[in-house]
Amino acid sequence: MEFESFTIEGRNAVLEAYRGGQTIDRLYLLDGCHDGPVMTIKREAQKRNTPVKYVSRERLDQLSRTGKHQGVIACGAACAYAQVEDMLRAAKEKGEPPFLFLLDDIEDPHNLGAIIRTANLAGAHGVIIPRNRAVGLTATVARTSAGAVYHTPVARVTNLARTIEDLKKEGLWFVCGDMKGTVMYDLDLRGPIGLVIGNEGEGVGRLIREKCDLAASIPMKGDIDSLNASVAAGVLAFEIVRQRR
Image (cartoon, rainbow, N blue to C red; front, top):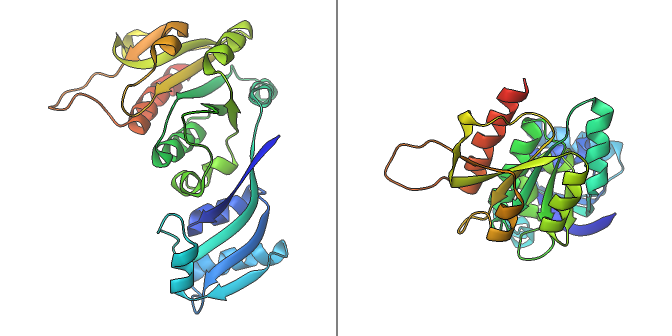
């Protein structure tokens, strides 16, 4: 496994990190704060013998990378990237056709975090991101995912197009979000599937789009021309969920 160290901020993200078995080296709490969520986090820290340090709000602000620590910052030893094989194995163990998210150069950590959260709630077996030109697993991603990053495997690959080719050999087929594609309601989105979401500005790149078997569009009414990447991922993902039921 490959590891990337970062801090975890926010009450829910820190609590989910504990529940997900994430290793936490040190916990910083706002001095004098003893409400319910904080006490729950303290109990989890005590179970795992995590050193707890009580500090001022000013100190937490200095430590924070997101500016939204909610009085809680955990220094995690690392966040592990999974392997694509782990995702396929998990699908097989559950007796389900694989359902994966593949993200083409998502650069905004808030979008990545939101997409990982959506993937978890949609029952996807994992999220695949490229190694270069895209955000990795950061504190902001962890917080925005509301802790889903500790429950949904995330793999980082060198070549997304090659990964798609390899997964096709495993029986998966791929649909990408594309405003010029076929309306999603008119597509059969069942079976082992990879949902490909493009970056915030240009969408799915040409090479990746050519590797996909289908392009799905979301019917929209309004005065602007596109949805946020994470919102589009959610709409398409739950159409897949609906059809898989």
